[in-house]
Length: 428
Image 1 (spheres, helix red, strand yellow):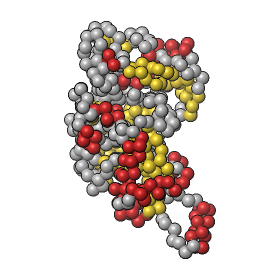
Image 2 (cartoon, helix red, strand yellow):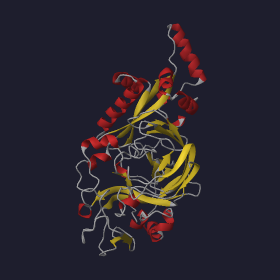
Image 3 (cartoon, helix red, strand yellow):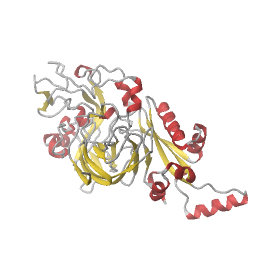
Image 4 (cartoon, one colour):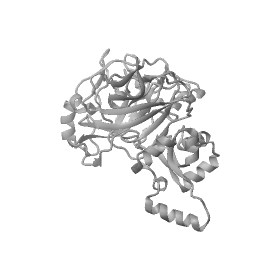
């Protein structure tokens, strides 16, 4: 029997795909309330986790089948961590079977995906339960520890003496969900960047649907997925396997409260999952990581039948739209209509839409976003390029290869593809 509301506080061990056990089913239009675990650094230093992240157990949507889509409306995001640590990583190849995000191992006893424990604080705190050796596939080239004010308006990086206090109480500081098995990254006590303040703007780095092939969660994207091609561990794929992914790992900072994501269905039930919440991030996530935190997300999931997608479509909040793509104000519209009348032109009625593209490089990601948009809207790529140039923008979600192409789409085309009412409700 389907449910109208689901509370989600269980996690995968880092693998998403046809073998994933799903919760639900949730009826279309239903609500999920999820307590997410931090992504990136905590799972990265917990080699027992096989995916680089620790995302929620997928939720099945009643009636969802491949060729459909699921509209995910983000009602709210609330941070529950008191702070975090992050920074630029350095990999330790001796503690990995090829890919340290996916197949960590103990360099001493050779155990792959070893269980580990935290002994003390600092870079050598992660130890193999089997032999006691230091097991850490990653260390910081430059790292920081950050705390938040009570209202979660700002994040502040701390000096070494304060960081050590935080590291001594790492579990409580990170406030990990009860079923999370990751180590708190604050145990490593990085303190290279004290006194920096930043505005808190939480968003979900992972949000989407289950891929059609068992995939490490952090690699469910066309850029990181490249590392799976011919990989020596259990989750290696052939090049054509990239098309089976759903680009759920986007790290696009516009995937925040008020936004809508429309994601492709690749497996029966869809399998909506989320995680990797961040406190803030500039476009590009150029450090490779940002401030990972635990948090509570409230999402509404609605099934859209017979809407085949090659990748996600994003409807950001109006504030996050590129300047050139924002709908005209009533004052601007009067000026535009007067100009159109002078030249005997009928103004095109249009609305914003944002297409996600991924690839091995940023150039490939841009090409993917443009071709996805063109195919879905039945336009030429050249028309999409013109629209995104004079009436839109390309934005980098994540380096090395996740972007969005945002531009205004004619109302008649939106009506034809079945998205007009959704887009008008978001921006009208």
